[in-house]
Image (tube, rainbow, N blue to C red; front, side):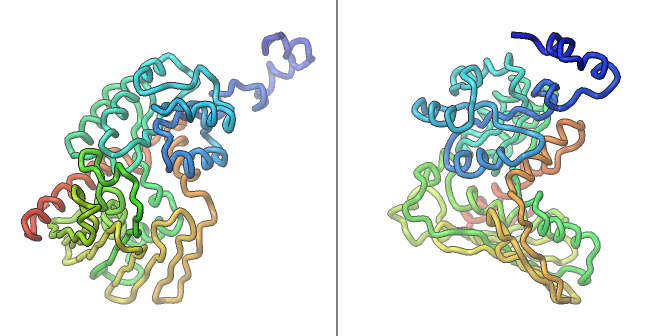
Length: 360
């Protein structure tokens, strides 16, 4: 077989190639798009991330890291993944020698995020870590340190911050078109029956607050554009036979500067998907505010926030890929994920103290 240089010369493209930009189809694959390896092939990777990677412009699915050998041939057949780009959790360190992979997306249970995000960083690969960032704030700091030490970028998978209508609300936090903000309500939950087993395990980072609670928590922060100064919380368990280790429902109130309050709720026992903001001179909302599609809303002046119409995960991953390609700051860095976990730890502490209000 002819190599690329021989092909160019023999095909009469040599002169053109020396004076004109090389066409995309002649460029090395790595120069066109970043190679992504999904670490963990559970429901989110299977149902959302892998399909979304087929719609991205700046990255593509090239590798997998899995502890389930039976999944390998299925993924290879469906996505054309090479044998040399298939790893398990024990040999993933070898990915350091694979130039085909630029990014490792960590999509295992929350309790394992730190372990594998650090391994990915130590392999010299950029890290995309699914939310919540880790089980503890100390683990978050360890991930950030590992990425900084290895000179790789770290981005947390808060897809909503990449979504058009959400970004409008983030802009309104600065421009205040409806006057000063007074309070907001953020709720995210679903009725889980049966439940994903690991989400019932405390050691794995299970529980409604970790799984769904980071949506209203992060939303309260990006919708106000501020950091909370205190929190009060309580857990509610209506099915103790199922939720014997973790919270089924968590209700928490955040106090922000300027007298702004946020009433938040998250649950594995109630379906809800709502973000409402009340201001001095009006109001606005997103309902649903964190679904995979169809995020929409209205404002008191008649503004309609129509659905985005794009694959959220594809937009998220393209944004993060462009930050790597152009060496720019990522939209949702590790520090943002850390802030949520610091607050989340206080939420659990407050709930353990019968809702005592704690300073942040």
